[in-house]
Image (cartoon, rainbow, N blue to C red):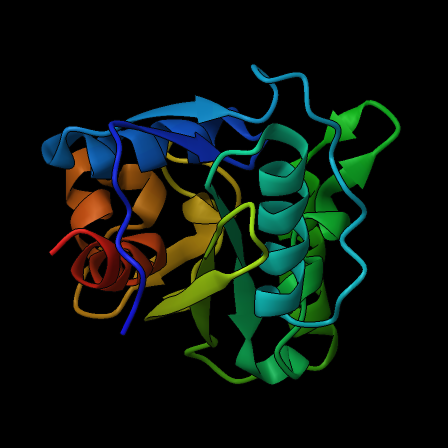
Length: 203
């Protein structure tokens, strides 16, 4: 049985403003407000694992240990089938530049890699999200979500963040970046993981 979360404020172990806002919107109906790792002055731990759950655990446990509070971390990314699942856990790494993250550059590289191998259309892909809720005593709970779809080019839309402008979820003719954020929050990989998190820790 999953351990229940009690309280009205949750530490979210992320320095990503877009991800924090998305989590805040998903938790608001449950009377829980969020505080981010940056607001708590926490450093970003090195993500040294090769799995989403491994990296989420690193972030959640580091934050819980540093603050003495339960901490929720997400590790997520996009897996492109014709690229053998890349960029996967390295999704954010593909966007790294000396001046910060540039996801337009990362998306351009991803499409170019698909073109270089003449990958047939549709170029199927999925977003994955793994949530880990860690307690200061070292225990944790894991919740995994995903959403299937395909890559589109050129990029479309200005909403969302990360790879949203080139990802068209299954059953839709618009990208995540063309969707109203509330609609995206109902069907996204993070929403799928969050549903399991809410059922496990709040229901």
